[in-house]
Image (cartoon, rainbow, N blue to C red; front, side, top):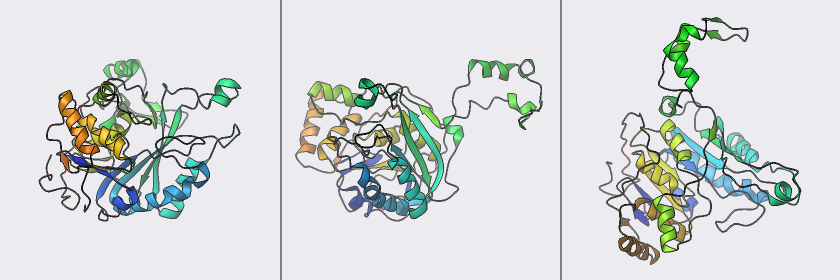
Length: 349
């Protein structure tokens, strides 16, 4: 890339600027996964720059076109979109579904699968319909569209297997006491292989992940230094799921609405290369805290001063990125040449 990052690590780079302009600097077919959560189409303006619902589809369309261009043929685009109500009425907006249709029908994406992120810790909203009038239930689910450039993107569900239930563990241990191999009335042929231990259960497309992070270095240092943290952060478990399933170690992950750089931090922890684009310099500068867990307070303050003063290309040599709780990621190493994207000396992790 021609632009200089605000900061970079051995694994990735964080850039301040308009995502469309930064995307234009990327070569065609150079990215393995774009994982992002753009500002949602909300009725009330937020500090992080959301767009009005009626304008949303046209606003986000150019980003989709550029993502389609930079994705590899085997690549994926995972888009997290929260729900919204129509202005002044208890009727749901269809903006997230309109985005889905435009991306597939007009840009050319395939919908590989629709996912739904259930956040049980989400506060009741909107206040008028849920808390005051009590005519609607709490909105706790985001749509997460998994787009792909072709109908056969890179994916391996074995990397994200869910733990077996206690009952399944007993079945694997002693299949004969639980079922008799035969064809069921539903048409499913339950064979003897049903009791095989495959290392875990295939997860569903409903991801139950509470957004309750309170112990990360990002939040802890923000509180200690009285810094304004980004108000709309998704938990690292969400990008971790898709990064594990859709990429290999050494692949390149891009977030075009980086915010507090959860995606970049997660990618680094999982030994993927990463790029993050964010228009708000203050938010991106503070996101460096995710990579400074083992640094002293004075060092952190010094780094933040440099970043906020407009100094670019700051290198963080020691990051120590660890996901909590730490989980093993079973993936094959498949390093790819990405010299057009990364700074000199960053070709290996």
